[in-house]
Picture 1 (cartoon, rainbow, N blue to C red):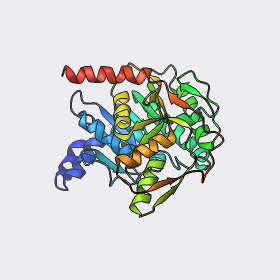
Picture 2 (cartoon, rainbow, N blue to C red):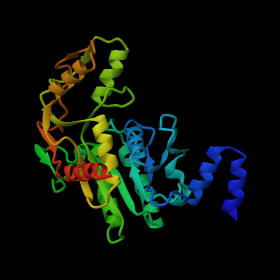
Picture 3 (cartoon, helix red, strand yellow):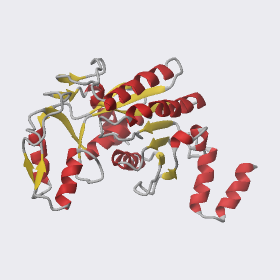
Picture 4 (cartoon, rainbow, N blue to C red):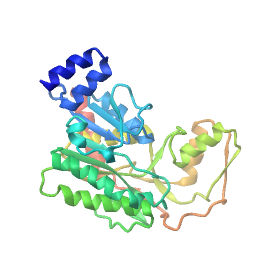
Length: 314
């Protein structure tokens, strides 16, 4: 009765109101996966939402503001940490892609520790309410100083508050879902390359500096080697992870090989025809930055191969 009454009322208020009624009741098309994406208005979130929508997934996108999110998603402006029952309030999603994270590129910010209980409490509410699948964005900075390929068994010894916060959340949620039948996936991110000024990566900062008309960009010596992945490829990998349930646990979203930082940044500047130039040696390397580190891409290659075969076979 409540649903029928609200549907009638919403019909007179417009499609967005009707959409909200549908989401509150958890209605969705038969056999269509419904994915909740938190932090959807952010640099990564907007790309992941679009990839999911392109794959025919029903997306509930939430953030404090969602003006940059694809309009094909059900966009909800809210503070997820203030919700008593996020699972039912956000439409009983099949899965969550938890991207929300404050001060992600400020590795020394205390927000990574202060917010940790809030992330855990939010995910616990979803799990306790019966969500089937939890996918959380992790980071290579969980590992700390390390040289070589990182896989799911590589010991984590984080050396920044950001890495400590991510690593602690992974351990806690992994324990939370144990023996509950919830699919758990931890997408570990590396260095994302994109020419949007919206992000906080070095590539976004260079793009913004170029727009501001600056001629020099202060830089390190750039000799350290990292795993770089193009923005669109990264977002597709994250979407591909949550769209399947066979491959679980820690999954590196990465290229699978290292490249010197200076080489990748110089290539980025050339590819975008920027006039700005790097000013080498202004900043020292961070003490916890590895000399050469990259992700073991075995799991993501399996996922992407299966994804390609499914699309080819219809």
